[in-house]
Length: 603
Figure 1 (cartoon, rainbow, N blue to C red):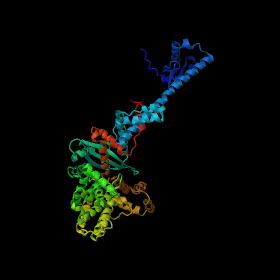
Figure 2: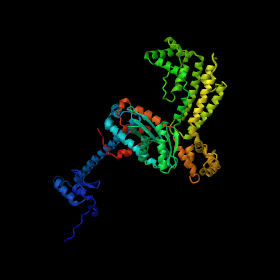
Figure 3: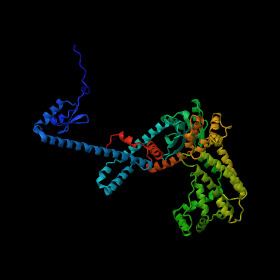
Figure 4: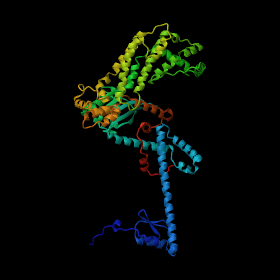
């Protein structure tokens, strides 16, 4: 039986295009294929028989009579026509790609600014109107950009997924990371759990990003929150041994030792044979809780009642504003008091104190008598509470902000406690140098002396509350101080693993000189790893610690602007993507997204 021959492979025959075939058969080579200049049909195999058969069966009768220069001119004309035809496709492809990139960029801007996806169509109308006036010859290019609601929705999903993919790659570089968590409800009463991550790489590059927005449809127990945290860590492929700290508010579902998130996290780490992470109760939240000991209902009730009387009805409110304008007052209105806003009470009290004479006069015009407004002792209380609340507001502002290091926030807390002790001693001596409103009132020589006993009692309560609230933070004072300035750390009190390295570091004049001008992170990044491995490791952990859940609170504010009663149908997934794009510091790779899809102009 004869042996079957294997299938021939064209590549093995080494066929190449013969340039003479152009003159003989009107064919040219184009992208590994032979193209007929006359009818633009292609022949896949460079074989003379195939080209001759095509020419003789289709074009010989018409073109065989062309010889010499006439044939050469015809070939040149046909080649030019084919080249111009091919070149028309290149700009069109480039235009389509540019249109897709433009739609991605507009979608990113819409998501980051919290605008509805349907605004893309309005943006396109604006672009087209501008193009008609400025560059009418290019209006078709603007019209090719697809910005329909469905396209913007799809683009936002793709951009959000791209940023999340970048975060997944970034987390692989983390040597340590920390988490900050907070939970709130949206306009549809769906509990939303925000999880932020701050990680540090070996070269001290710090990355702070939104790890997840987890929707809790049912209960919001510690177990529910723990499950969502575990899901987030699994999706990001995070190593539990690298978890440095967890920052939460004081809700039982968060900090509970048995059923709360912290308790469950500690048990999970213990099960894995790992050390429990540093637990931080949001310092801003702690400070706000401390302020609650200064209730002073006798003052706040009167202030809120007067403000509500003025602003409750539109006519009365307008009359009050006109009254202030006639008096050429420095302020044009009083402010509403909102208890949940951190700085509300201080600003309301300051404005009320500065408009006290005008408010009293206006109330008299409206036949409303408030005896407290002319009571000297009550005015002392108002002035003192105004000053102390403003001092507390200053501390709150110092603690706010993204990317703050725990050592800087702890310094503000310690400084305030020193200020509080100083203020207490000065008030006992009737020294109001740091209390401007109280000082101003004292110059008026009120009929009633300054109520020192009540004010001192209030300051002592505030001091005691700070001592209790921040006692847990003071436990870690040595660790924070070591991170903040290793050159002044007490070697004898340091852990044994740090002692020899501290001795080496504190006696190195070169590093001591470099410590002063550089930022803390830059200093540790430049520290030799082989000489100070334990100190660098400690610095890495401390640099990731969230001192507060400020970033969560700020993102919840964005969520309230995104998912409003007018956009209540916004899905959890789209809410997540919009929030991610609103707070991320990463830039989506639009070039990659464009290359991954077929570039064409949609409708």
